[in-house]
Image (tube, rainbow, N blue to C red; front, side, top):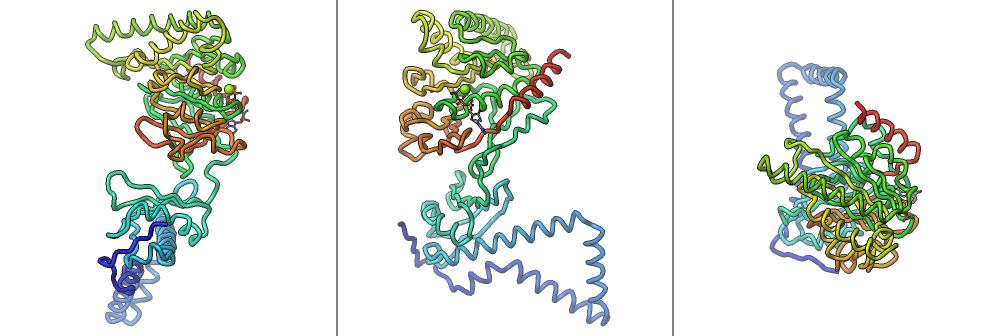
Length: 429
Ligand SMILES: Nc1ncnc2c1ncn2[C@@H]1O[C@H](COP(=O)(O)OP(=O)(O)OP(=O)(O)O)[C@@H](O)[C@H]1O
Ligand SMILES: [Mg+2]
């Protein structure tokens, strides 16, 4: 284990202790001074001040709540500072990290921590288990702060961030604006993960039962609740997306010929959109140009790319490549899922056109890398390591970032029915 020692930053423990308790010391001194001055003016002065403080606290519940929240954050800060002390590896530097900010998340707290000279992210990360044990929490995550190497974030996880069931906010949403990011899941540090769909395609891979169709439903629900968005559904299994058929402009089942025909029509629509963009001298569809987004969802890509007649398969592959590579600026968003994350179904040249890639539980690290990209499994991001009993969990890679472990919300059949009928009403208005 890496040990950090830096004699140059050693300072007396008393100075570090005073630094840690500076808020409490300042508050005590200020209270003492104010009460003493009041007592010097009139002997009953301190009582007046205490009664006035009590009345303010009673009359202003907002101030009370703020005070309570600050006190809780302060208590959490002191606990973490104490943990820094007792963890010898970090404490040995003689200067302990300072906590710059505390945020409450759905699973615990996130601290923005400033490191003293001599400490760096790797040392803090290596000591995460020791800190977690000192704090008595479920897990502790240490992440670097991209903008400044002297800061890290420490996330304290108190409850399971990937619970068996997560409710979708879309069940209660009256309508959605798909030009804005939509909530797609909750990360293992408790943060809500949002996807900005315009100009992005989404690829989802994972073994049978891993939660692909449920994840697709979350995206379809958001698209359906935006009446300006057109929806086309391809369902190689017929029954997975059938509940959304009423809100789709077109629903194509396990019929390769119909699928090729539908993609040809989409290509014609894409060419027409580009022609109108040219007329108005614009390079892409935006909310202002009008024209709207068109979401194309393909569940079970392998059915269309691997099964049936070879010439239909080839036509489908070529039309899909064209749509994914050229459709972005024309407002087309392709969202595809595959049970077989292999190179035959998802060749690299197709995969790389998808900005968002979600690898749900896979049977092997190779399959996981087929979705996320070569090399991620070796770096510790393998969907083969996901507990098979944890459905709806996967690694999401968003363009250029690092994969994030998340859980998608679950929409029951009844909830889908409610959302679909609400979306239908929005669309006939
Ligand atoms: N996010 C989730 N939260 C809770 N349960 C889930 C979630 N996702 C999936 N499940 C459970 O797993 C089951 C299978 O999910 P889903 O149908 O999405 O799998 P799939 O990957 O599409 O499988 P297949 O490849 O066979 O089509 C669901 O019926 C549900 O019980
Ligand atoms: Mg499915």
